[in-house]
Image (cartoon, rainbow over all chains, first blue to last red):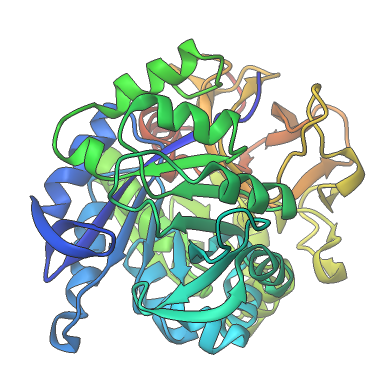
Length: 257
Length: 216
């Protein structure tokens, strides 16, 4: 027995509410972030991830208050990402109660931010979030590119090479989202997950596409992810986190029960 | 009313530690502080921290906290967490930094060559997630916590104690390392009790009630 594989419910937060989109668009309200966080904690979630997708700069500070409130009631690790552009943003989130901070677009526009934040706060609290999309044509060897700005901009960067570079720059963990799968409920992109998980020495969190509990099992056993992240299957009550963990345990995966 | 100082030296998740303490000890006076005088006055001291060891020592010295911490570690119930555990030892491979030298031993990086499980699958570093804490010595801080309970870890370096009998618990990743040490009034853990849900809160509650001896 050793380190457990993690289940991480993800809360996309905009203007103080949890929402969920399909392929990064068409948002649907899923509730109050503090209430949802508390529920997942009670169900045995191993961690929680908050992605601040607030568009307006006026409401950017809201996430700090939400994290403060969650951190006063929920005593499991919290990762917060979205709109992190400077070392000072990282500091503010950590001070509000985040344990790890996710850096996505800014890692591409300013890779030095990853190095600086990692040197300042330690690699263990720097999660580089990668939104990847398949760019190879059918029949070609599989290739994925890194996309930024909420999935709208192709950076031309190879996702596997980028993950390795981020590891070298000081990332402590990779949050890997398949944009082709996000919100589709047809399962993780296992080829992508495995390609990245095998390429780096840091933990990889698989994200994007979970629609049932077999998908979570596949993400670990076939995708070789260290953790699996899901949103909608938990938000709308299809499955509880506890059910998911029991199912994974039945399939030979070590989990915290 | 117990007065607990949470040492603030600019390294990370102090608020989480303070909030978890407030949760288990609502009647206690919990102060996040970088004041040496307050550390000296407190009944108990929590030394948390995440980040890099060279920064940790530099930041402690910049605030003039070295002496107060060493004195507190000699005299009153003292809880080191994560980097606050590592900094108590003599030296670290991280940036070849010297620690406070309160406890004998070294802090080492997980060696890449050893990081495979029994099936040959690569083990990732940092060691992130919930792992089993196997108690190797009875201690008041383990009260009500079954050996083998899972706690949350996030670290790339681990402590190698320089004296037999310091370890209070071990965790396997993939070899057994000391994830908790105990010496008189000092208890220090590599994992994060403030992030380890019920088991972690119990350990913090035990610390708040602890008389600073190793009598069970």
